Length: 237
Image (cartoon, rainbow, N blue to C red; front, side):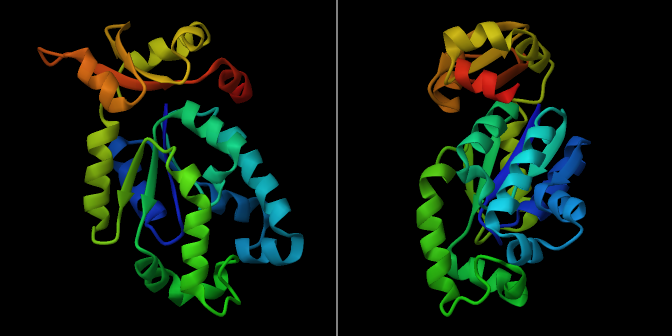
């Protein structure tokens, strides 16, 4: 499995992702950094010289590659999760954490490098642009498994909150899910399941509902997973 960290610019995705990966002992990958390395130019230059459409194609290409891997903390750009194909691939790959922050806080954080932010560079009112972009992306961001407002949190606070949510996923039962995803998607597609000792003990429309129905006891190792719909499983192959 992977853990995906998405959300708007300036919310701390890279810093939190690096620290979470270190705690897990996993590899950290930043999609934007991979795009810059492959294009041999900064993201802002990709936008200027090749256009946003080219950038989005590169973004989709890297996400398709990354979701084939395991034990990675993947930080995506702010617009990646808005794309329906990206969203399906990432959700199948592992839990998705969306970081957010209040618009004035975001502006304060990104202002020192405003020129390197393609969607804000040249804006006469960056705060209004941030607010408009957040409103436009709200529906997609709401589909993440967990949303954390980082406005008043340190990086360690953010990582601790993520850890509370992802630790149930990081267990041996993940292997069971990998081996049976095709069969499970027909019965549990679009739901969350709780797996204990290679057995599904509960399911629900949300993580919380599935966990509450499991009624776990005795410190048994459990994993809570999103089962893709059959069409999502095909997309991810």
